[in-house]
Length: 220
Figure 1: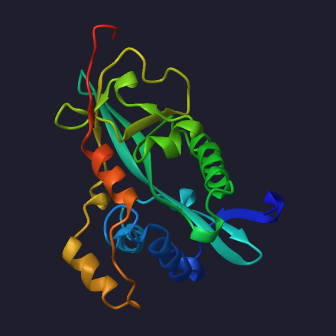
Figure 2: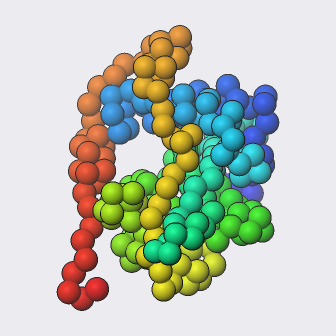
Figure 3: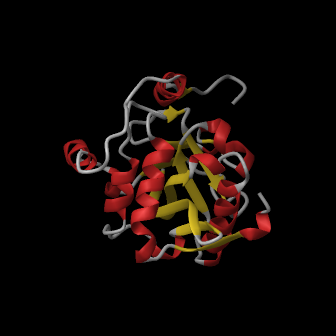
């Protein structure tokens, strides 16, 4: 695939259905049997923390093949000072175009836009193997803890401005937009053409990483 044929632009209302369908195909059975990410995409757009300017699609010859969505989040330091930051998700690429640099292009454009908007930090939850090459690092390295004081292995930090988090300890708070009503998600999915649910190895990998935590060592 010639990267020059891909256009990165803001999502438009005319893209909504295509993005939801693509998201469903991309995440189906990936982390659990079935998925809820397509429902998350649907409800995120209506939430106050959704950032329209960072809702991007990748388009190839008139067809949407990738999407990333951002929401507001925050970090609170040891003194109680609150720092507005970003998180993204879902990030998805149509299955037939994965591992071809589409997600990289979406992220790189979004990082540039986010910096221009004055944001300096992104915190996400995901598979480290997918994101360390994009500059994401361990939350423990930057002293960014979850609300319970833990350092989840799946929680990663990218500083858009070097050293902006240095010298403090932080607590991460994500937007309530991520609090998905699972019953509502299932009801919505039931209105769509059925897809078979089954187990696959990526679900076990997700189970392991999502429950793993990092700990301080003597070297730290």
